[in-house]
Length: 128
Image (cartoon, rainbow, N blue to C red; front, side, top):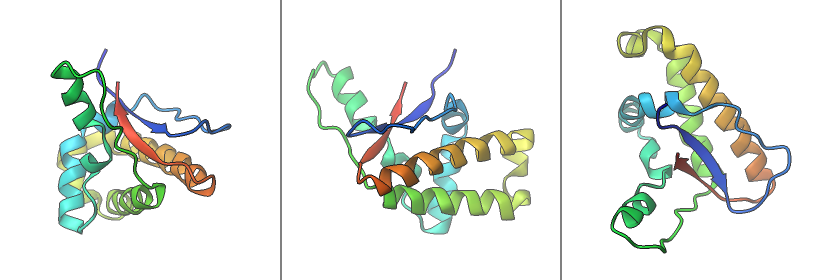
């Protein structure tokens, strides 16, 4: 058992299923953030619920959920997918054979965010 990431939305979205366990997104979390920095993208970590987890760790029952715009998330996801697909040498040492699984996770997330954007829902990536 490991930790995964999955999108959480501020309203119920029928037909939106994140089919991944999101473990690849956490396993390569630092790499994704490094790529974002290199490419001038909003860091992947900015879409997560880190602050909410810290509040819960400090014993606070209430916390502000870090809702984000799907448009912002899509810019980052598109940039990450582009790098992983077009520059395999850049990530092959770290990812080895995992690149196809990470791309599948990102494309699944992309699909969910595209629907959320159309339905005007906000999101964040929740650690579970």
